[in-house]
Image (cartoon, rainbow, N blue to C red; front, side, top):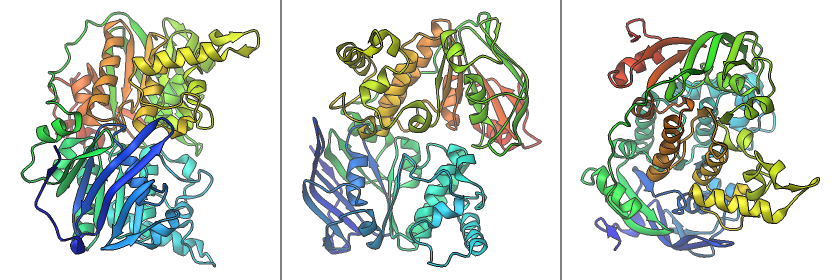
Length: 513
């Protein structure tokens, strides 16, 4: 039964979607969805992966056209042919998967499509920098986008929408690459925007963020609205979770620690350069033993991405050595490392982990394609059978397995990537942002898989900007700042505050041996 707060006069609504339907081959994404958003509010849109949230917002943003239903903006019925139409109507969307041009600078990406005919580069860079300072989204406007971390790219996406002065802002999982402090700052920014007359639709799986940031909430489940315009001051997070999953969520204590065994991964004074040719990290030393999860916390852009790439063999080191399973693999190729028991879950799932132009099946067999061949040719039946098994085991919701992987939602992309990598039963796991963009159940499923590998004797390195996740899941926690390890903490006793201070290189923060 659909839950609804007190009705609002339609003329007072900034956005109203009525009986919206959208289907894709084999999948009903939206089945008569209802959504009402008032001006000057931050409205949460909640639901599991595959519930239809991103599809609905892509319809509002002009990316998709609904099969049926009505869209009203400020009480006026509208039909958008493309995103440009939506932008003209004052609707801007920050997508979960970045839509940026790597070869362009930050400023060029921000103003692309809305810059004057005569571009004064320094003036535009100064204006972008001023906007970044104003909203706490500081990124060097002259820096090429391909040199930025994922967290910094997220900031550029938000700046793009702010630049266009959208009155309706759609934020699809905007906090997944932000630190706790940055999340708090984003909440303050959004509140100022709402007070200025804008409305914000905030898609998130993190219920504590929703409760602290949003005024109202609408919950989708299996493509349908199950609750609308809930008052966040009177709705508990447990009730939101129940509405999202259809049952009361189960709570679990911190997972019991395994007994560490022999070292399986060891970094000795390892250093590497970033994309701009300067040191991204230097003299990093630590080891991970069999049966433990070691986490790395840090603000995006402090060398974590480059460190993961070096361990995976995708970036050369400049100094030091890397030992895996008692063998020096410093100069080994990525393929040699994978054959030796390494798996890598990169933070950029579509840019590095998956091939967006290939099908779901082709992406599923990338690690094991040699076993799907007869002579030089891939046997389609074998590949499809393997993909079906992977999809079923790891809960990937998909339609046509021979369809493009880019058609999957962000959460399902991540499930497929994580499942493909862990399916090889690796002895060393490097996971960068492995639960980013997943719903409550999806996060737990991925975390359980990592714990399963740890308990099976693997060494797991987990890099995440979600400090709460690291404090809950890891056995040891390292903090990386300025390309160096600033401290080591025991997650069982460390507080968010002291770890957060170390992330910001506060001299008063104390590490625990």
